[in-house]
Image (cartoon, rainbow, N blue to C red; front, side, top):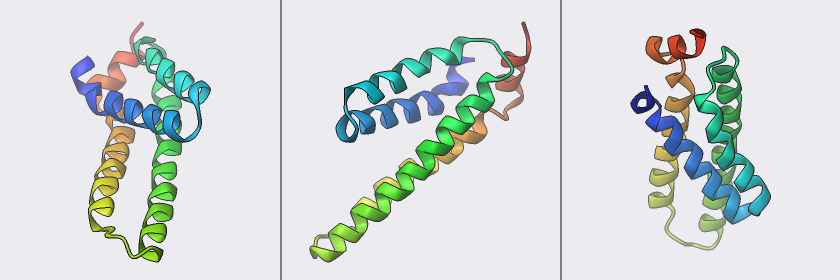
Length: 111
């Protein structure tokens, strides 16, 4: 079961690291501790995580746009940034839909 959630875990860790760098310790620790909720077998957990990952998805897009605009204005190469951030955005989107997997959704429905 945990293997099927590896993309979700990786996305959450990346987002927590982002929060640590740009928002401070408190949001990063809260975000990192939120990973523990993945092990609670409740039908609401997948939906809560999809909202959390949706916020992360939108945050990554906003950050990417800002970084690219800055790099273009400063005449700094930006293509590699787009590739890396694009992959992170795709991983986050994939993680959102990972909860629709039958095995994963079944884990949270069973008590």
